[in-house]
Image 1 (cartoon, rainbow, N blue to C red):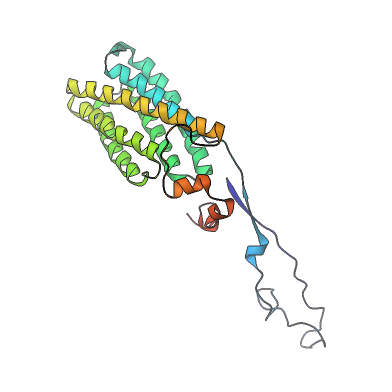
Image 2: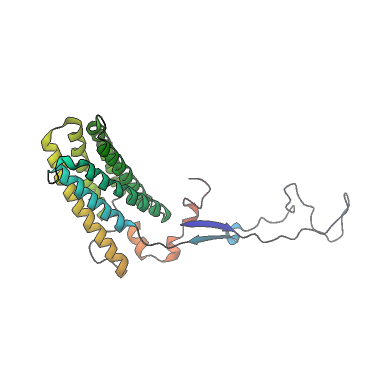
Length: 259
């Protein structure tokens, strides 16, 4: 998390003088804003301190949550869990919403907008899925189908900017057809589409499980153990010096004045 704190250096003004008179040796009269006219502006860079707070990476938790919840919902679509147990599945998925929301908040604090947006999107999808399924809302299947189709577009857009994070990009490449078929199944009700969505959901769970384990090993050992495939500026963030990574810090959200 980033916080900016200003340390102000007191500026000594000129000595007291009578109105309309000048005191020999005194500095220029104060201007309308209280600053002495003609004095140089204070060096804001020297006065400003930006504090960084290291945190543990929340991404392994986020990926493990995607894996477990996808496996549970896909088991329902594949018939491994009886359809009469839909409410139990929905209540299980609700816990995924809480965990993914927490991961998204922590990712925003770590200044990773791609990871934070993706985890927040998953959290919203789990919440909607759990609420509609648990209440058995009228027309819920079709509404969830439309939501899944829109989520497909969201996942595709996220994939277009996540290429340097190749393991995340691979996860999204599986998520796109998975949510597309799930959306088509919800809208049309065609049975075989639900089976395909369930199979792709199992594949998504496997990729998410691998990504979570690989990232956790990397955090523990301080180096890439299993393939993660970072590239470009993402690879530089792991290997570049602290000075290189902080060059653009003053223009990042939380430091600059506006988002």
